[in-house]
Image (cartoon, rainbow, N blue to C red; front, top):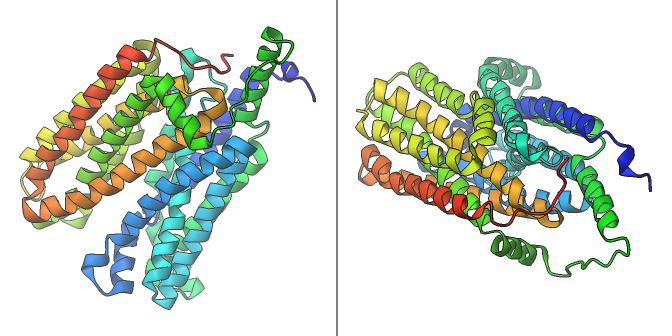
Length: 432
């Protein structure tokens, strides 16, 4: 085997970041272009308003499950194979959604939506791939740059709705399926970028570097390889590194706050007579808060520490909930500011918690730990989103903001606990 010492690790890291940024931007277009029409398509196919939200719910659940599936693939075959698989499954799901629209089949639509979640899982996994070879001192910045790249797709995707309508006419498919036809192309493009350019594989390179370092320290090779199952090794890692559990809890709580409030905001505004255009602007400002400032957040997490930035995220989320809870139905400055802060608080929490997970997860089970954390994050968000609809329907939007504050407090507690334990026992791994 060729010695990894001949590889310029810093050069591989730069190439990895460039490739991931490109794929993330293209892949995000595919993921976001159908957001505006998913519920409309579900309502049309099912003939029921009550089932309109099922497509988004199944996509979130699909993303949660595929996060762990892709993590297992990456553990065995590397980041490149895992990410390509995720985008290909997502692209196939988009095609199936188109078929469901043509056949007017709700079953096919929900299966396709769940498969679409695979691309969301791949986009999420890409942020961790950026940290495999990153030095600890700049790890948060590496992760945050890849998160930032989502801004390109998130902004461009919804604006391609008109183009997708033209594509639907040419393909002679229902207009509401046009965005998904274009989405499948975007996901295929992301798979192509990863498959061709993500070489050498960052995870495999990190493992090779670690193996050579271990060989120097242990020339007789007397190291123990665990025979436990993947899930048992994940749980063992959490027990050995308590900050992992805290970071996962903070990540899940912050994501649940964001999803539950964000999905119900358009309904709250519409009840007050807000125009669809204004609602779209509010959501765009929210997305801006989520992604556009992530490089600055990453720099802060590297300088001030992961736990303090995670704590700051919880504080910003609480401020967002106060504003949203005070916002009247319709259009108001409180809803504009609240949704922006909701996205910004999410950015603080996700960048800090994800970097902490990358810091603390042992190299031999790193992808499984990361996949398990995204699984927990996705399932928590799906549950919170479902409960949010019930709360708003029975008690109203202000009550949702008030009850969700408990999750934001959970982010604060997770940050406090992680701050106490993250420095006690750092995980093994490459430190270029």
